[in-house]
Amino acid sequence: MRKSEVLAVESVACLNSALGKLRDIWEEIGIPEEQRLQRTDVVKKHVKGLLDMMIAEEEDLKERLLKSIATCRKELGTLCQELQIDPFKEEESTILQLERELRTHMEVLLNQKQERKQELKALQDRDRDLCDVLCTRPYSIDSSAVPSLEELDGFRRHLATLTTEKERRREEFVHTKRQIIKCMEELEHVPDTSFEQDVVCEDEEAFCLSTENIAALKELLQQLEARQALNEAVCAELRSRILELWDRLQVPAEERDAVAPHMTGSRARTRRELQLEVDRLEELKLQNMKVVIEAIRVELAAYWDKCFYSPAQREGFAPYYDEDYTETLLQLHDAEVGRLKHYYETHRELFEAVQKWEENWRLFLELERKASDPNRFANRGGNLLKEEKQRAKLQKTLSKLEEELRVRTEGWEHENQEAFLVSGQQFMEYVAEQWQLFRLEKEKEKQERQLKKSRQIEGELLYGAVANPPAKRCVLGPHVPGKVRKLAQSAWPPGHAAVQPPRSGLKERNKENVPQLHGPGLSGGCTPTSNYGVKSVASTYSEFARQLSKASRSDTSSTTTTTLHC
Image (cartoon, helix red, strand yellow):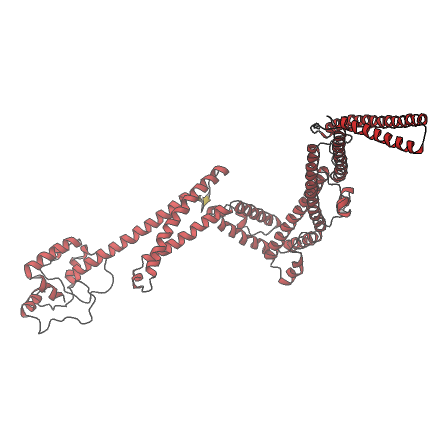
């Protein structure tokens, strides 16, 4: 049996029980049967009316619940569409439970809708403020519709980008503004346009950070920096001219000290003071023409040296030798110095590389000169080994420098369509000539040494060997064996002592074998015997050695010969 049927049976039972109790009461009271029936009908009518009323009320409640369910379903469908979410899935339940679930879920969705609308409004307010500062268009989004989660996320990212851009532009504006103010102070420039006044005078927060304003800000800074750079260049040129005129005119130190405060900086006032000093010096220069021209000539000669000018190139500037000191002559010298200065500065690196080669070359020649000095072997401090290592290193350095300069000079000549001259000739030809002169000098020294040696050998052959006397000289005395003494005596012509100088007649007859003899006669040794006549004198050392060997074998043994020479 259903629950509703059980309730109905219970209700009928309750009603019958109540009627039974009423009958018992009526009977005790003594109410007639007829009245009892009437009263029972009245009770039944009241109960029926009450039940009908209750049924009507419950029916009304049911209708209202069903209408609420329908309304909630409709609202939920709309909310799901607006919020762009999936439709609500209903579960099987009673009318009352379904209505409660639908109403609760609808309230949740209404809250989400309200939150999204509120966040959208807040984001739009922030967007409006950023757009006012950056002068950009507002973010495009439908304000009347409920934004989706993706749209809100995209809006937040857009605002984050705008905020970052605002900070970047603000930082750029502040940095550029400071540079502009600094340049204006250097130039003593007063803001005269509305834009300049907005930049310098207005509050930083009030400045519009549009792309156009930032671009105009950069352009203003570039203009001011260009003027400042021009001012610096002019001041640098004026200072250079002042220093040049000071040196040429030999301006005393006290006059230079008066201008010293203006020798730094590039403000407008500094430029004016420098210009006044240049004008004063130019006028003074005209009054001291000869001194100035001679000073310029010293400077010109220095640039000739730096640019490796040959004498012919230097003589090509005829005004250098003119003694008529006029303003025209001064202008010619100024122009020539300016030309050479520009030429040197343009190719400074190449000239410095050539100068480096020249310095290494001079050092190399100095070491070669020391290597040729016979007294260098008296060294006891290890300098000889150091010099040899340095000389070997210099040879490698020179070779490397020459190769680098060859490449650079070829590039220079290709670029300038002219030859790169050092001392009036192409650099590599100049290098080759220096090496050739070095080799010729070495060959000359070698020939001189050979000639000197040859003359020494011929002199020894003719006059006897010159030996460095030992600490204790050997003398043919009574302790020399008799056989050796006889051999020593037989080696000289009759009537001559063992240490007698050669005869003048013999010397005259041997002039063809002795080209030149310098210095006094030899102080020691043995004079050639008659066995070695004029015809037997050898023209070369090898021939002399062979003949000497033959004579030694014929006269005595090698031991006796050694004793004789001692």
